[in-house]
Length: 510
Image 1: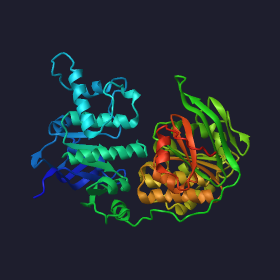
Image 2: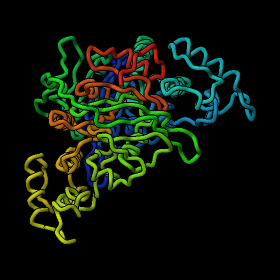
Image 3: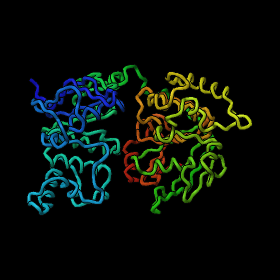
Image 4: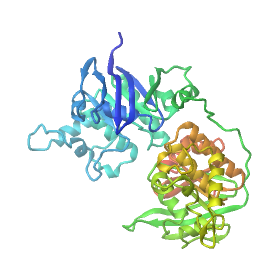
């Protein structure tokens, strides 16, 4: 009989009537890496938060090493050898690695701190699992990858034999991801049992021994990973239908240079640069993908290019016309469309209906108003046409934006921005939170605009997405463009080095 580190049987969890997990079964074999796969909102993190004691289920059983357990809180979970590394790190930045790991733990020296003993233990663990990190360094001095190692060291120091990692590669460069996988394999070979929460198919195929797939809170399959397991098979289980995972090759259709960004600098409230001398161009009919670990200036660059933040210095030109100093409404009138990162806070008025959201940026344009009065006939005709063209699923035009799924909310934004006949589209994380089918739909729409001569800046944390549809790839690190590469047999390793701030002699192509 196979030994299980974790068994979860018939787990059900509800939030205000919404079923997040519906009678889910999950088994983690001892000494294995188990992938928990599913789209955003499928219930993966909720299930693991139940295992870690952050939530309590309405129904179901949890067995740890064969013993039934009621997991009331994280302290109980940690005492049973369960550690969780969250997607957003729980570290105190001004404190050192040792101090962070000591937080909340009793000292062996009573009222006196025991830094020396803790540091020695951390060095031993670091060497055992190749978790290279300086115990005396402050967290704010460490890279994102090093901070993640501190989180892993912390749970190992507390005696964890079962580790839960929530989307651990979301903030890592390709090189850091490879290093993490080496570490996880070392830990597995030492008898640790690991749960990897992810929505990335290639990660499951690369490192997992087994996989459990969740879809809409329900279990949609589970199996051992073999050489015969395919991305298409896993995709079908994730979304419940066949999904094309690639696009046919399309010819280059670039024209004259349209958008020029030159020497753009932006300082924050503390007078510190968040953008530092940004230079790039986008031609008509071209998609430039902006790759980089989240938090390196992508959000700020997007705001500058749409007029939401006034730049400190530099210039932005559209077809030779200077945009500096213009208001956001003037950027809109000049033909700059914006697909924002946060569709709830920035992209949509969630309490407004579909019809209103589709005209909200052009309600006073000649298309939808006459002599200062709204032309409701034109407004409703526009909404009906876009609802059909973009296959937006809703109960009707009066449906509120908040009542729609994430994919349909994103379709409203796409329909609104594209129907304005833009010259430039700034697409910031346009597929974040969408299932694979909806993501492919969004990318197809961007490619259609490219073929019509629109210039597109695709800002994405998903390197696979950037590689799939970009003509050129710019890499941003700490508010600077480290290189711009043609997307022809481009080296993932080179992109990863640039994402980490290592220029490695890369030739910038502007």
